[in-house]
Length: 102
Image 1 (cartoon, rainbow, N blue to C red):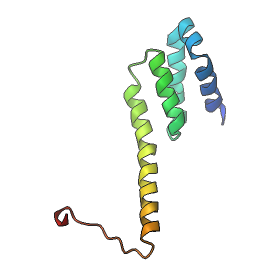
Image 2: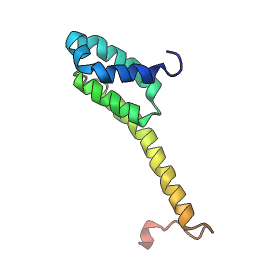
Image 3: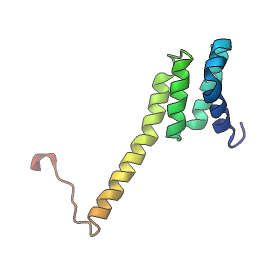
């Protein structure tokens, strides 16, 4: 797939999912599975892939999709938390607190 195509393919499947699944759910799942690797860092696309896969009756790739979704989502949340902490304590005054100190 050339750059930009996976997103376009996903849009087509999203728009016509019901018809395509009714025609040949096996081929739909095969195509959706092929998109997973192209969408690993795109959280919204992974959510759409998960939804479409479930609509097509997939049970084999759900865990893989959740794992892919969690990695960038967790990274984004950690990055956001770090940024907020550094904004709240620009001089580095915030020090980690040991669990025993709580």
